[in-house]
Image (cartoon, rainbow, N blue to C red; front, side):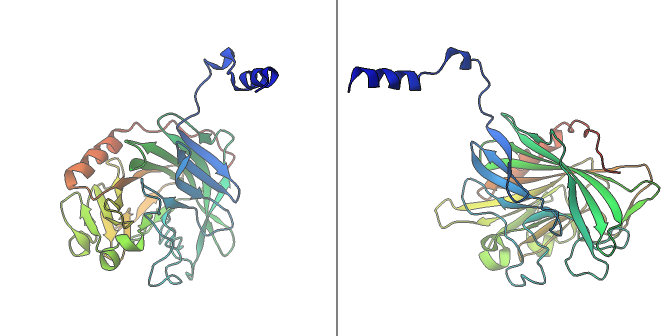
Length: 325
């Protein structure tokens, strides 16, 4: 190789000394993508994405991945995709907010959850976690009236890599000025997960386990718990197992509340199963949940250790001022 070419290569590949002290690329990132999507990535591999298109019925997270590539969740019920079109992987909604249904897609009094604001500094990357803050309005679909104002923070926090991480969801609900807000008695809401078909007990021979040691729908359905784990096969590899646990924070109202879980692959944690929860004018309802995404089929002790990590996490910094009412 001629000497000038060699010299040019040395110049192109050398790293200037001024970069030696620069911060490294964050391991965990919240990356905005086209189509109103934010991708949460660990070492540039997507673990989960938040879809927040304001034209949709509600925001949702899809896919949710462990160390295996297929999503541990799916869109819609495998045997009733139209009737359960609201089963959008993992999502926040509620069946009865001031008499309006934000859960289903075809209600007599239909609601929509619309992302109306993403603050300037909403996307935060880091070595240990990445997060995104948004403001959502819960609207009466008939006339666009604001029923509730929701400030949501999504955080992805790896514990031990892509096969062991937390999706932490912080929610703040306030009524519009001069009004109160009531979450009615229902088993549907605020957090739901539709597991992949192969993980469901009926379709794939999966397993449900809660913090009381109860198993599968017959024992777990509408029973109070600190957590509930749904796990099963996600690939045909020898180690192709994984799952998701919903963690109910001990600071949530009426903890431990009931879990609404079915053998058909559906799992949710209730807020107001038997009695309404009302937020007075000027007050704020704060809720904290997490999805623990994991490889394998953990025993109760393993899930409990991860729940302890979640329960000990400090609350997030107060949300910055918003232009929403």
